[in-house]
Length: 317
Image 1 (cartoon, one colour):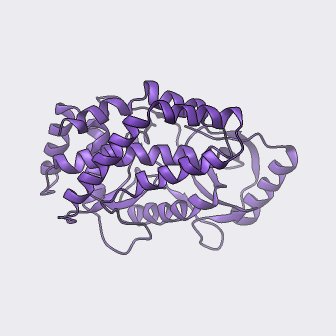
Image 2 (cartoon, rainbow, N blue to C red):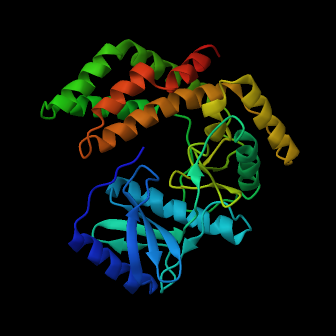
């Protein structure tokens, strides 16, 4: 998923000036780098090296972006070399302000975003290295077992009903109406599981939230990029997306054990995250929709989306 706005020459020149002012980099070329969902991503070719620039222009997301940078910096300082290396500004900052946006610069890695069943082996091994470094005090949020993601979604749904009825808005509302029973069922299940999981809030780790979607292979190495959603949470937050498969749950548990992490995936937590993330993704679409039309993507998410198999798995637990 990616949102990239076309930019005119004046904007690009100001960006080049900012990069020189902040980093001393003389920019020779800027080309789109279609990575990530929020804001803009660019490949910067300087006179000595190439870089990856991320510009987060969404105010509601910038705190997460900043927190993710702090998590990356902590991990790199502790020997993790597969999460992306931040280039610090001349003043030692992890990011800088550009117009109303927040921008961060990284070393460029030639690679592809690849996720297959086979990549789960290195992905889970890499995540365990992260888990072992979990410590309190990072500038990232902690998960809570609640139905807040469903509550927020229903609030967004109500707000859309009151918004101007464009073709895009009408398509979203008609999609929600068609799947209203399914949505209500998932919201009810989420509430039930949240209450069950609240009985034990232990065993939280530093999680990515979408490690598979951020798994890159390049230069003969594997990486997990994009830590904007870094969060203290149970490992199920990283495992749920493949948790509907017996082999993936087995592999995840075996990898935890191999790495000395005394924890096994809990069915109620996996089910909780299936429903929670269902509403989380809907909420993210709805946040961006007023700025960038997501009506067709939302329609496809309900009609053909990969989430369906995860919901069926959670319903059976």
